[in-house]
Length: 173
Image: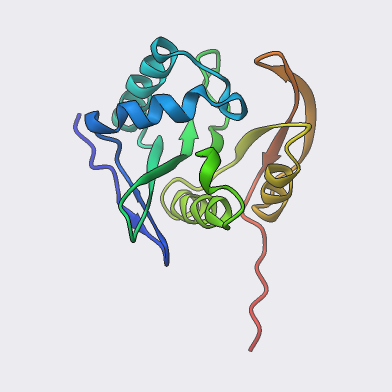
């Protein structure tokens, strides 16, 4: 099986497949406390797992790059947990490098990824947000996620949110 990973362009960003030269930057982002504080070995496992998920499941994470600089600034997309059985919704995730937060890149990338998912693999999604991450909680609500169960993820208190369908958008005439 050989699936083509789509490239998505927004006004300021490109969501593209990850490549081997991205690994060092990917590992830097994964090492950030907000992203789980993983070591290079843990980041490598996730990097390879992502490639496998695209091939086996038809979804995964993209590298988020600034269109102007082509610099990788984060990752966004969907994953299936190890312990998830058949019928368990994929989990959405978005992580930006510390130096680029607060510029609106997170909502722009997450909305583009969700728009793709809703067109290609419509269905429910989950996302897990730590209780202290107000920005991601707000973004999750904008994307249509609703409150769910309290969980512990990587030693941090979090909320597992669920979205059964895309939110209704109102368009002004």
